[in-house]
Image (tube, rainbow, N blue to C red):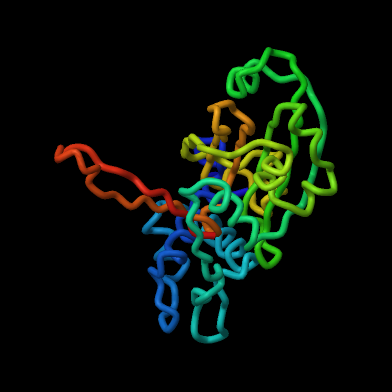
Length: 261
């Protein structure tokens, strides 16, 4: 193995370089009619060996992001990452469930477990109380987009079946069960794919992901769902639109959260 393949951190250098070049391809940094820089130039630009560059290019080729043309060089594949579908997630039940209309769900687990301290605090129930936990992935045109882990109070969870969750929107099932969705508080950050999430999302360990947690509440402000979601950034992006909040203060803004799938 090339001595700089591993680098100083837990993510190998070739994979770090893969992530950088993938992002540049996503951003359109390499015009379709122009070849990518050669291995030697990429090696000098990023301070890695040609063996590392070669391994990275093999990964990009395997993922269909570049193609090698005999006698002409290596070119980025236009449209290889697909065209996002626009959907607004800033509303309540209609907008929260609209995401499901554009994706297909695969249910990986469906079980009732004692609530951990963190889940119990989020759902405002007693530690150890029963909650319904489900792990699902959503895909678009066969490509995984998100990995969703949800916790729902057991009483509400028992109003729908495993098969119903495997084919429908959880928000709609919660409302059918008697809950009336009123608000949702979300936090967005970033994480690296681990040995559990990577294979389910069809990516490699160490690849960056958008991480979202959301607590959904009913009209009486009671938590009815705790969601922990991981999204592939090549398939999903978050946009924030800002406007003055109407109070006259130049420092206060109102945000509208939108997403693209």
